[in-house]
Image 1: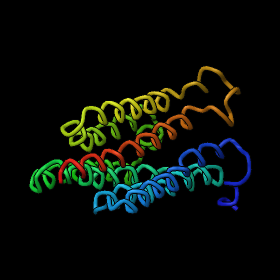
Image 2: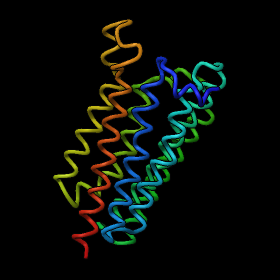
Image 3: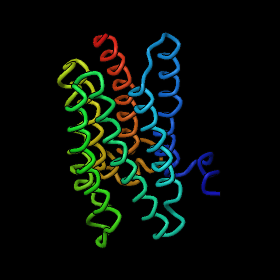
Length: 220
């Protein structure tokens, strides 16, 4: 019933669909690259990161109203999935940019940082302070994101500034709950800050896939 609510209009429907579209978009880009012999482990891992995170994010939205316990469990799944994919993206984006040892070093840093965040989320006692506070979560995710953006900055400022801008806009809208916090009852279904954040995330994912293409072609 919870899954089928994805096809019913309610206040979490658009939150679910704005992140769900990432899977078909990234899959099409991956298949398009493969068609023109642009492929490799980093492309698959970048695509896989979307597959890992999106179902957890959708579950967080769809199962929100079942019970407080179920809601908190899926909120944890959503956040943990984000920190799981950060080392995967760090490895992927560093693959064609840095030497193997540098890649491993950066990936290990990302793993250590993600592990600490996952432990904090999993064993959280003060649920509101540690999990539901958007400013705290945004800062923690932002630090992990900075690590996987390093190879992009090193390789292409063109892609870096566009990806950073997209992610930053999404982070601000999400952390500040804009515009719904300032216009109560006006954006209950459409136009929530989290929906815009999902859209900016999808745009960033597209740019990241094309950055990998750029890194792959320039490394040959």
